Every structure is written in C-alpha cells, then in structure tokens.
Length: 131
Image 1 (cartoon, rainbow, N blue to C red):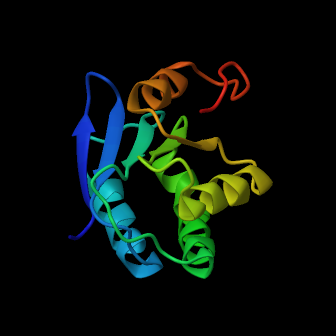
Image 2: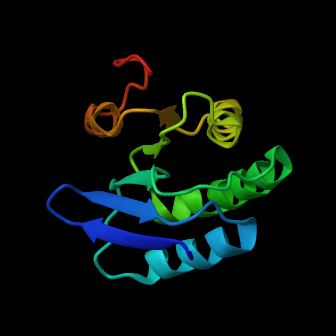
C-alpha cells in the first residue's frame, strides 16, 4: 500500500498512512505534500503506522531520515510524530534516534492521543514524556 497523506487545515496536521516504505517513496510523498496548496509552514506531521505490517531495515530508515532532513526546511513542520502499535518497533526507534541526532523534533509513540498531544504542545520537545 503506497504512502498517502491528508492535510487537516483546522488541526494544522499532515497525517501520513500506508505501509512502511523506502526512501524513494518518501521523496515522492514529500514532493506531493510540498506542492499541495493546503500546506502551511508550522503544520505538524503525524506518521501513523497502526495499519502497517512489515517494518523496514535500519539501513532503510537511515535513508528515509536523509530524505526527511532534505525536505524539512521546505515543508517547515512544527514537529513530527510516529505512531506505532508495537511496543518495540525498531524502525520507529531508529528514526527517533536519528532525528534526535539531527536535532529534528521527531518522536515515536505507541499512543495516537499522546502523539497528538505532543504535536500540539509547541516548541519544547521536553514538555511531555514519551510512551
């Protein structure tokens, strides 16, 4: 299942769904999001993995984070969150660690509501605890 996105202008949220994907698919998605006239700087991004079933390798996550880093200044999100139903999702944990090393405000959560609350919390990534 290809990556899909929805933009909620009221919540100022971009939600990305679909199966785990490779870097090329993420680049295609970000190009589509960037060209979407509904997107505004400061929208939060939520990667919802609750319907995904086949995690990618750590090497693939490294490639995806490189794409995220390239597009971050163009998309200008306030924050990004990954929601996974797994207690241990190595792909999400690697993404979180790599984003932290790049000083990107991206965190992984097992609770959809906690992720939304963190996305809405503002600039300080330490104002909420992770799952």
